[in-house]
Image (cartoon, rainbow, N blue to C red; front, side, top):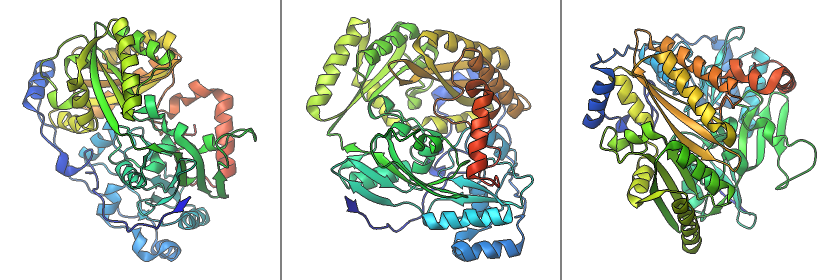
Length: 532
C-alpha cells in the first residue's frame, strides 16, 4: 500500500450563491429553447433578483476567540462573502429564496478543519458551547440538508471540509483507496488517475460535489449500472462523532453483526462527520463508447432495460428518456428545443478494456435489437456524454425567464414502475395546472427495479416558492401511496423528512432517534435534518 503526501490545497471555483455551478459557465437560454418556452408558457417577465443582505454573525466574540484557539484563527471565517457561499444548497427552493434576497439561514461562522483531530476538536467545542454544526462539502444538496434548525442553539457553524483534500493511500493489490471528504469529484478522479485507477462515480453534481457528500447522501452516479452506487463502492469509513471516533470496515465483508458502515452512509451529517472514506477502485478504462437506441414507447424501452438487467448484461451506462423528454432533447441540453427523431431515446455506454467492451456491446446490442430497439449510432451517446453535467445550468436559464424548473426522483420495483410513473406525473400536472411539462427518464437500473427521475417545468406564479412546495408535496404523497421510496439518491434532508416515517415506520423512526441520541446526545450535528 502506498502512503501519499498531503497536497497543497489551491483555491477552488466557488458556486454562485444564487445559481448553480461555475459563474463563468452561466449562459443565456439558447434561442431554440427560448422558442419552446414561449410556445409552452407564453412570454414571461424576467423575475427580479434582489440584493442579498446577510444577518450579522450571532456568536459572541469570546466564543469565536475560543474557536480560533481550536483550529487557528486563519481557519475561522466570519466575513459575509464566505458565509454567503456556505448558505443552503442548490435546490430550486434554495435558489428562489436566495434570488429573493433571503439568506437568513447563513451560518454565523465558517470553520475549516484540516484533519480528523481538528474535526473532533470542533465537535467538542460545539458540545461545550451548545452550537449547531452543519458539515459542508460541495454545497450541491437539493433536499434542504444544509438548512439546519438553529433555534435553541447559541449559534450555527458551517464545518467546511475544503482543506481535507488528500488521497491518503492506494492499495494496488486489494484495489482500494482512502480519500478525505473534501475532495470534489474531478479532484478525486485526477489523483486516482495518477495511480492508474478510477472511482467511476459521476452524478450530475460531479464537478462540485465531494467524496464526503457522496457518502453522507448515498449518492448514485450516471455510470451506476457498471460501477455501482457510491454506497456499494465504500468499504471503510472513519467518522468523528461527539462521543468519539469510529473506524469501520476491516474486511471486504463481515458477519460481525449489523454493518455499521451503513449507519453512516446516508446519515447526512446527523450522526457524525465522515473524515475518511475507503473505496473500491478499478483500473482506468482503455476504451469508452456511448451510443443511442430508439424505442417506440417508454414502456417498450423500460421492458428492454429490465430484460438486459435480468440477463446480467448491464453496460456501464444505461438510461431511457420518456417520449416528452426525448421530444425536447433534454438528454442533449445543447439541443433543447431542436428537432427530435421521436420515440424514446436510450443511452448505452461501455467502458473498460477493448475486448471486454466489444464483447459486452455486441451482446447487449444483439439483445436490444431482438427486443425491438433501433440503433441510433454513437452520435446521441457522445452528445449525452458531452453535456451530462450541464442540465443544472439550463435550470438557471429557465428561472431567469420566469419558468419554474425543478427535479425529483424515486425508485420502485419493476412491477410497480408504470403505476408510479403515472401517479407522479398526474400529481405534478394536477398541482401545477394546465401547460405543465413533466419529463422523466430511467436513471438507474437494477435487476429488480429502477429509479425514475422527473424534471418539471411550469410558468412561475406570483409566489413560485409556495407553488413548488405544493407540487412537491403532491408528488411525495403520490410516491408514498405507490409504495415507492421517497428518494433514491437525493437523500432526505429537511424536504423529505415529513414523509420518511411512511417509508420506515414509527419503529424505524425510533431507531434513528435512538442512534442520534447516543452518538450526538447534545443534538448539535445538523439539527432538524434527516431524523423526524
